[in-house]
Length: 131
Image (tube, rainbow, N blue to C red; front, side, top):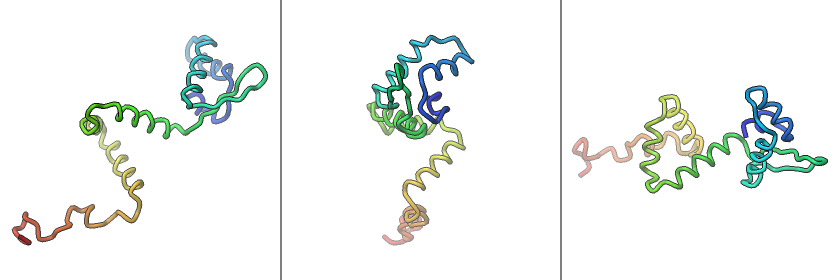
């Protein structure tokens, strides 16, 4: 998928092969099999061009990563524990990115509300008031 996204246009097996061969030795049939598997899984679409196919990504790299994370999380027997473990592996920068993403998903109408500050009941048991 990385190579398909890199080209950002429909690519042939030969183009991906030549690109990969700059880094390592790899067989044409290996690249063809991987692209065919990606097509069967719905990650790329293909169009016939003569005797070959041109492959194009169906979704963005970000959507692909999100789907992988969702798939892994949904297969957990304890999704909450899996999230806690995942968040524990994150760097401070990644946790800030997560906070930013949550704000984006929640939208502007949920920012700076009493529920965000945790101060919904000013007369709480913490200060002895209200009860």
